Amino acid sequence: MKTHFLKPYVTSIDGPVAELPRRRRRVSVSSSSDVKVLSLRSFANNHNFRSWMRKMEALHEPTWRKAGIFEALKASTFKILEDPSLIQTLVEKWCPKTKSFVFPWG
Image: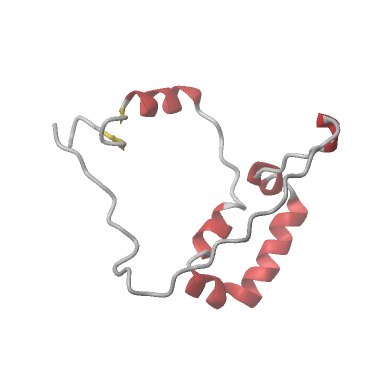
């Protein structure tokens, strides 16, 4: 069996180190109804969000590319259909020992 790994994005560890945010106090929530869960899926299905993203892209694309977030932001505007059988097939290829996917072709 042959395994392929993704090429690392970072080529040097000599650059500046990002500071971690300070630890915040734990906030208690009185009931689960007070908590609102947001996901990119809810935004991607919203026409207003996609329209807003097109406007922001026209203004900020060079900055987003330089920051390395352009592709992620664009991806958040696409509707992704769930395919449970595809997910199951992919999960079956996961190797926890190497923390990678193992495919028949290598």
